[in-house]
Image 1: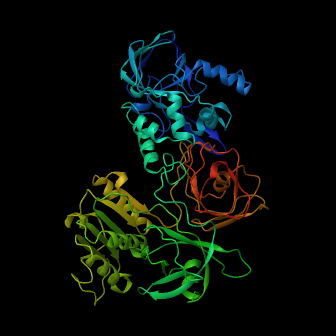
Image 2: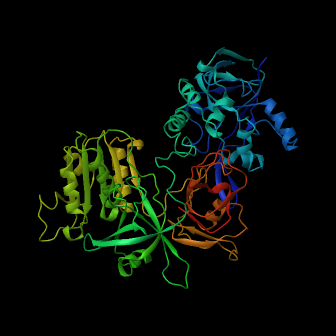
Length: 584
C-alpha cells in the first residue's frame, strides 16, 4: 500500500552561500497535524524563486522513502530528516520508474495529478551540502516529481495514497526525465511525450525544441539554438578585400579567404569575432561585429562605426585593403525564425547591420512572395544614415515591403517624405500609426536604451516573448536564480594573486585574464571577474550556463550528462586546457 509518510512545508528565507545571499524555501520541515493542499501550494509553504518553482503544475513536490534509503547508502549518510530533498510529500511507494505523467492519486481529501519530474537546481545541493546533487538525482534516475492539485483538500501523515487514473501513454517520471536530460532523445518518444495532456508547458516546450533541433547537435530542449555548428574552430586569417564608406561615421570592410575561395555561408544575423593585435607589447583584444552583407557572396562584410573604443579606432585608423585579420567563424542565434509570418526589422544607429543581413536574405528568398516585410530604422540624420540606398534597392525587390525611417535631428538638406518618414525617435506610436502587424516576428538591434524601451513597449502592446528577437552589443543579461540583486559592477581582474594559467578571453566583456586554479570552474572564474553569467544547476545538467567557445580547449569535471552543441561549452563544470575565447 502506498502511503503518505510526512507533509513538509517551509517559507522562503535568506541563506548565506559563497559570499552571496540566496532566497530559498528548500528547507522544509515536517508539519504536525493535517495540512490543506491548495491549487498553488500547501498551507504554510512557499517558493523562493517562482520562475523555476511553484505555480499550478509545480504546486507540490514528491519524494520517496525508498530514495532516502538509496542515498543513505550511496552517500554514506544517516543524518536525513523528512523534507531533506526539498519535497513537500515524503511517500512510501510511488517510485519514479513506475509513476507516469498524468497519473492521478487521491490522498486524504485532495486529488492530485503528476505533471513533470523535478527540475534540479543548485539549491538541492545547497540543502544537501553536496553541490553534485543536481546531477546525481538525474544520472541515478531518482529525481522525484511534481503534483498539481485537481481538488483541494486536507492531507496528513498516514493517509493512504490511492491511484484513481492512469496517465495516457504510460511514460514514467524517470523516462521523461531521461528523455530531456540524458543524451538519447528518440523522436518517437518525444512525440509520445507530447501526447500526454498533463505534461507541464515548460517540459512540452523543451520536447518540441528537441524535435525541431535534433540535427544541430547539443540539447535543443535545454539550450535552444537556431544555428548549426561553427564552420571552423578558433581563428583563421582573412584578407581585407575592400573598404567602403557607408556614412559619415561608418565604414564597411569586405573580408575574403587568402586564396579567394568562397567562405562558408553564414546565417543572416550572425556575427564574427576578430582577434586584433594593437601592438606587440600587449595582449590581443577580441571584438565582435555583426555581418551586414548577403549570405551567398562567398565573402563576409562587417560595418564598424567610429567610436571611442580600441576596436573601432583600430578598424578606422589602421586597417587597409590587403591586410590579414584573425577572424572566427560566423556565430550567433539572432537569426530569422523558420516560418512565413510577417517580418519587422527594427534597428537604430549601427544596429542596422544584422537586420540588413536579414533583409538581404529575405530579398533573395521572398522576391515572389506576398509576405509582409517592414524595414523600420531610427537615426539622427541623412549624413549619419548608413545603407540608405542599399536598403531602398532591396525593398524594391520585395512586393509587400514597407519602410519607416525616423530622424531624431534632421539637417537642412534632409527631405521629409523622401529621405525620412517621421521626425523623432523610432517608437511604438510610429509603428501603430503605420499599422505594423502585431502578428509579425520582430527583430531588434541597436543601443541598449533603444532595445529596452522598444522591447517593453512591444510586450505591453501584447506581443509574446517568442515573437520578439533581439541582438545586443556587449554583455548579455545574467540569470542567477534566487540570488539577491546587487549593484552592477564593470568586469575586472579577480581579487588576489594573478593566475599562472592560460589566458581566458571574455569576448563581450572585453576582459582578458590568466586562469587561476583557485577556481573550480570557468563559471566561478567569471563570477570572480563580475562577468554577467547564467546558471542554475552548476553541475552540467540544465545547460543554462551554455556559452560560445570561440576557440581553445577545455576539460570537464564532472562530465556533463549531455554535451553541448559543437562550438559551445558548459562553463559550470569546465576548466581551460589552453588559451580560450568565450562569448561572454
